[in-house]
Length: 241
Image (cartoon, rainbow, N blue to C red; front, side, top):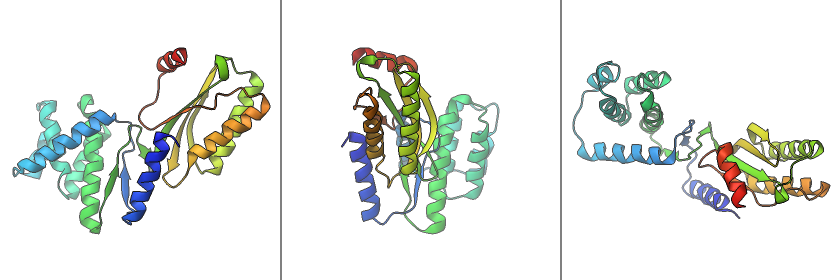
């Protein structure tokens, strides 16, 4: 079992044990470091517990003369209260941030506000699941990289086999394929999967099935929800392999 599979298994176990069926996933791709920075700042403001007027913070948020750093504070403060007007203000700001550098921060504030508001309205514990690649609805986004043995180029027939077998196996696991890219000697898949699915088993099965036609794929593959590797990073990785 890979580290990612182990983490997913433990996450499923924790949710089941605590009877948690309501959780939130950030839908956008925000680096983990920035997510952690947001929550540290959020906790800092909560500990300070300084009073503020929501309407004043909303006005600051949409004022063109206010520095981005001050708006960062407004976004965080508004996200800390169970207030529909505050949520709508964050939502409006995030839809087209006047300060592009706050796009990730406003994304975090939006999901944070949603959690606070949902918790207040439902009276139920809300859980945030952090992922560098985000997700959609109740599915997490993962990136996977597969390579050929000895860096050999894929033939047109092998490319057809790869696309057919992986598409079939992932459909069996009810995985949503967002992007499937096949290059000379490797291919990548960006996918959305439910927490209750053991997708690693399906990916392994797809590799094994492909290898029935010539043993051309390396059985080892990358499976992560931290980041999408660029073409340059993949090439560098293959050079070290």
